[in-house]
Amino acid sequence: MIEIRNLSRLYDGLAVVDDVSLTVETGQLAVLVGTSGSGKTTLLRMINRLVQPSSGQVLIDGVDTATLPAHLLRRRIGYAIQGHGLFPHRSVAQNIATVPRLLGWPRRQIDARVDELLALFQLDPAAFRGRMPHQLSGGQAQRVGVARALAAKPDLLLMDEPFGALDPLIRAKAQDDLRQIQRQLGTTLILVTHDMTEAVDLGDRIAVMDGGKLLQYDAPARILTDPATPFVRDLIGTADRALRLLSLARVGDIAAPGQAEGPAIAPGASLRDALAECLWSGRDALPVEGGGIVTLNALRAKARPR
Ligand SMILES: Nc1ncnc2c1ncn2[C@@H]1O[C@H](COP(=O)(O)OP(=O)(O)OP(=O)(O)O)[C@@H](O)[C@H]1O
Image 1: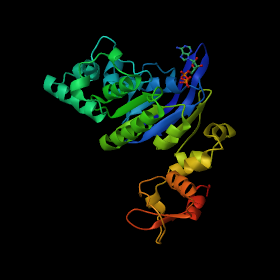
Image 2: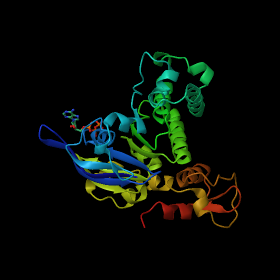
Image 3: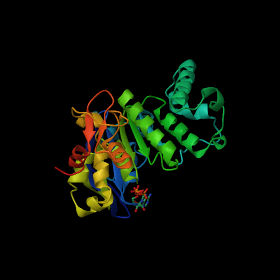
Image 4: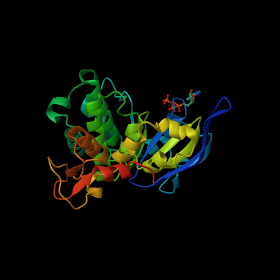
C-alpha cells in the first residue's frame, strides 16, 4: 500500500505539488490525470525520490521512504517513462537486465527473466535480445522500456505516459497487456496520462490534479457521474461520459434471460461495444454467448448516472 501524506514540492517558493494526500491499495492501479503542468510528473517522481519532497511523506507498506537510501528505494520501484529512456549503448537484454544485475541476481536467472519478458511483450527473444535501441521501432522501444521496469518484479510500478508514442492499435494492445500483467503479478501501479479514455479504461482509481492540487480521487464511475468540481467535469468531457460509463461494465454483468436474433456477443465485451453493435446492426437486443440477451433498454439505463 502506498500512502502519500500532505506531499508538497516548491520551486522558487511556488508549490507545483500542493499538499497532496492519497492512498493506493496494494494491487490497485491509480491513474494521475490533469492539464499540462498540473504537477503529475513531479508527484510521481517524489514517490521514487527522483524529486525530493519539500514537505510531507510517502509510506510504502507503512515504511516512510525518507528513511531509505534513495538508490535502494529506486531498485524496488519500477519506473517507465514516455520515450522509453533506454540506455542507447546497451542492448535490449542489457537494458532489461539493469536492475536484476544491480540486485546481484545469478546470470542464468537474469537471462531467463529477459527472455520471459520479451516473450510477454511479443518480441521474439532470439531476434530482439541482442538489438540496440536504435534498431527498434518506437513501439518496440516503449515495450522494452516497460519490460525493463518490470524486470526485478517490483511491487510498485510508476509509469509516466508509457504509451504516449504508440499508434492506437498497439496502444490498445499494450494497455490490455499491462492490465493483465498487473493483475497477474499483483503489482501496485501509478500511471500518469493525458488520455482520459486510458484513465477510465485502466484505472481502479483516478486522481485529478490542477495547479498542484488534488481535486478528486475516486473510482472512474464516481469521477464520471459525480465530478467534484466543474474542472473535473470538463476534463472528463461531457460529450463522451455516457460512452465512458458504458465502457466500464461487461455484457455478462447485465445479461438477462431471453431470446434475440443475429450473431451473439461475448460476455466479456464492454457495454459500449454492445451499444455499438446494436446501432450498427439495427437490433434492439443481442444474444450473449453462453445464454441470455442484452437489450438496448438495459444499455440505456446503464449509460446514465444513478
Ligand atoms: N526542476 C524544476 N524547476 C522549476 N520548475 C519545475 C521543475 N520541474 C517542474 N517544474 C514546474 O512544475 C510544474 C509541474 O510540472 P510537472 O512536470 O509535474 O507537470 P505535469 O502535470 O507532469 O505536466 P505535463 O502533463 O506537461 O507533463 C510545471 O509548471 C513545471 O514548469
